[in-house]
Image (tube, rainbow, N blue to C red; front, side, top):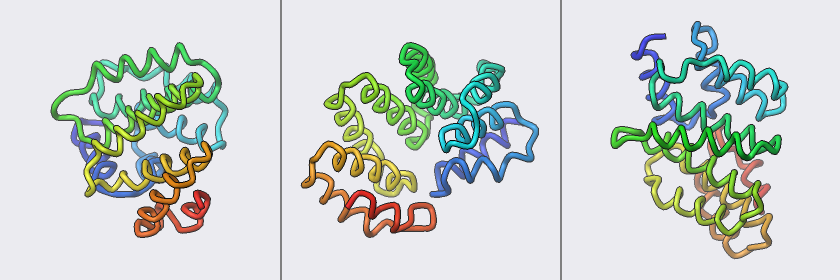
Length: 193
């Protein structure tokens, strides 16, 4: 895939609220190892692909030869997968690499994906305080116009509800009620309540 095609994918990701898995499926016909690896990781995270298969495919990606933003997204999601299977050291290594790719031109939605993965790593290591700080920082940094903000707002609301922080969860729930869309249906938002 040429840089222009990455640019189109990144443009869609940063300007639409289409869930990442759905967006990747729209691009799966493209013969591109990076997008396919990201698709496999997303499928694994959604429970439809084995982790070992997704990781094997992701390891084959030529990281240095690709668009930095798509690689940040890949590494962030891959790190989340590693967190889910208890491989914190590997997740940390991927996130460190992703951080080296950030620049002043990185879209805020791409940076948010990285920050979210870092919050997941903190949480899976048992540091809920750090996880919450990272989620709050992510929400503070992401502009109100970002189509991805509602997804992170949902994640923070769900986090607060699971921690028994009903006031914080209720405040976020009130904000979320106005952000329903096909990408974030009311049924999902009601999980926070």
